[in-house]
Length: 183
Image (tube, rainbow, N blue to C red):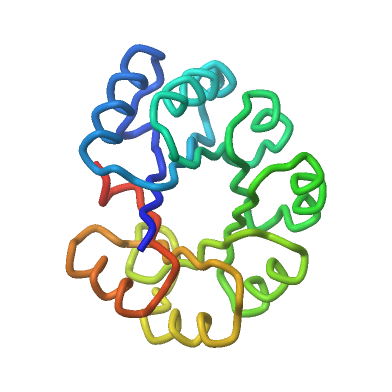
């Protein structure tokens, strides 16, 4: 099962030195297959995105993603872009740029729409209780999504324990994504 580490300003900081150091530390500790630089409020996003891309180059086989910005992802030479659930119209553009596309989904309809539009993978959330993310869907609903779709599905939301990871693994999801599990 694939591990997808999502960064957060709360855990990784906003200065290049601290960000670089924490990224290296967490990548060595957890060895994820995928990593997303996600920071919705940092005015220095582009600067830290460049630091992120540089760190990623040190880890062979690591698939690295920027949040929301396909053009910056392309410019920095990372693997792809992770789009929000309001960016379905960006899938085709990102694919034309040669990017691997992951998009956030929260409903069966969104998962199927992402698949139809050519997304390479989706996050489906929240699986477990997660701050400010609404009612958890649970592992049984995740299994139903897996049964009706062919797109790669990362379970997301409230995944903080090894027991939860094992539940996701038994569901046969492609992988799991988390912020707090990896910190």
